[in-house]
Image (cartoon, rainbow, N blue to C red; front, side):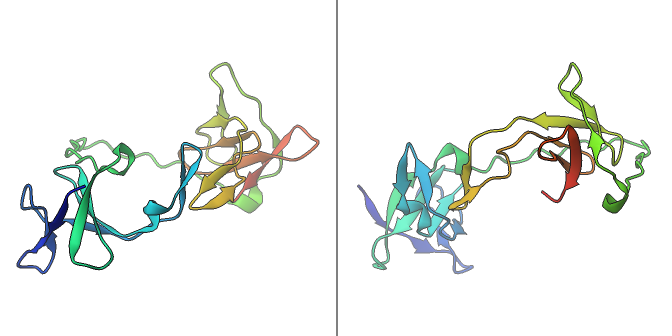
Length: 170
């Protein structure tokens, strides 16, 4: 464990001792479960160097910081500028209001998709899964089979005891 004293830049932000770039400050997040164990260290604030893929956490408000390797899921990948298509008109689909959509029978086709009753685009089928922990709270939204439309972001959930699906807020 190496403890370092971080320096301030002209903008009053901490800089990385390795590459001299400004560190990105991230507030502490929710409690996470990692490998079946509760990870309380995720709740502490940290200063991240995206260039070196390390983060620094202050030790007991002493002004000294401990260095840790940044997990892959927390790394920010720089986005390459995407080329914009020239003079391709965007085609907007007509999206129905949610109150105008009656309960509908939806069946998966061979590719696992079906047409969206709201916009006509192809919806993805999401199979039921176990309860997940999101931001420290149980999330029951994916515990039953449902369809999700990538175009209009509609979710259609099955009405219990029937073959009908109905539009759902989430």
